Length: 138
Image: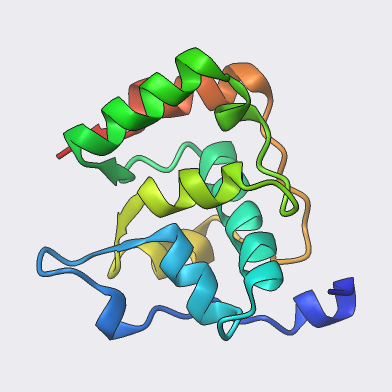
């Protein structure tokens, strides 16, 4: 997908992807925004995850079992936290386990000035900080 095509992507939240508690996964937001195109979904998920991390988004939630799964993966292979390139399936895993309030995400993206074409690549220590200290378990 060219950068020009990526620039045309609008972040969209499908109401049918929102769970009963009002949360949606970053993966589902990316998939809806990419109109189901898997390669583009990975690009959008990568951009969103990098942006949310870089801005220390405080309302990312994962279930206890999801956090255990991610922690165990990290112990085996720490690239789960550091390699969120679109061509890597680790972005799939992280974004499928990152839930955000559907009503809060658009405002956060707007307030912090998210741009789909910008490269958001948080440093390793920021990724660890965000994941271990800012993600909520619930």
